[in-house]
Image (cartoon, rainbow, N blue to C red; front, top):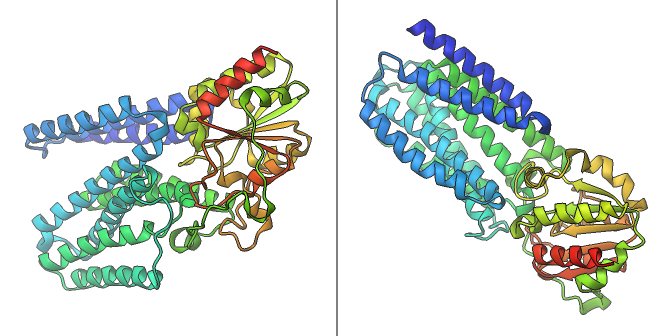
Length: 458
């Protein structure tokens, strides 16, 4: 039976690897999802077949409770809330790892070797800091708490002090082997606190990177749990999760021209007052969708820039309808995809794929930016921070240095937005005041619907 279980574990690990491989391409992403799900199902079944597993009634109760929470989250939660759901998944997974480590300590503290105590300390620290960090990320994404960074004097010193205290607690418990329940509980409390301190000062524009790095922490915590439980599959699966999250974070920081320390401890997205358009001679031009539809009559090349405004309005299907209408008029339509558009990596890709937008129409930032000067009309659907020219032109802006879509270089810009409020990073967008920009105020879905009707009637 043990040989069979190990063989199934190997099959599960292979499926996890194939899952990551297949999910790297849109054409095979469905296979990637199925492979990951099948690998997890096999792993659970194989684990339940272990002869040292007891208390199946409690396991069944746990499965029922988990399924009753997870199923509605998967079925009922809209695509716009995928980032929040991802943050909650990280929180639940990290909490599970932390609780397993806690149980192991209180049951076997005196029997654990020095290497096991090292692994357990790291697992508990990563698990619990990821739990509170992910919950805080969920709160910011859901806008339950302020999306802008919460800053206070000396915050880096406070964070590093809490981190150092966690290290000291872990070191004492490791080298003074024995049962230290109060110290262990203190480690849990300060790990939870460190997770809060880690995410609290991070601004909205950096939130996608925060989600990916929290994913890495959760994976590493699971991997260390595998070492503690001598479970090879957990080691492999956790290492895959942790390394992929880390690689993604590095790639995103590179795409945003930011370092890890800037993302984790910087002041990105300071609270800045919204600039009144009537001040300093700034003028905002606004038209109705019917009036703006005239701009497409002479257009040959159109680029659509999707952002969180499209996601919030669930307007991806109307965007696809608009694309079809424009292509029927022999207009070349492309989509400009910024690596951190939306609230999580690949957010726009997922939404547009749901609307059956062909993948070859989605063009990454490096490839689409040289095409903007020859683009007749750019239609921005609620993408604020990733189109802000201040990132290139204003050294005093918190966005300065972040690569953006060069929308301002197009011949004409239509910007769909509910109001003149700032984006998720809390920064006013200079693009609103460009003489080439026309604002279309209103719900993105309704504005796009009106545009489709008006263009069709021409």
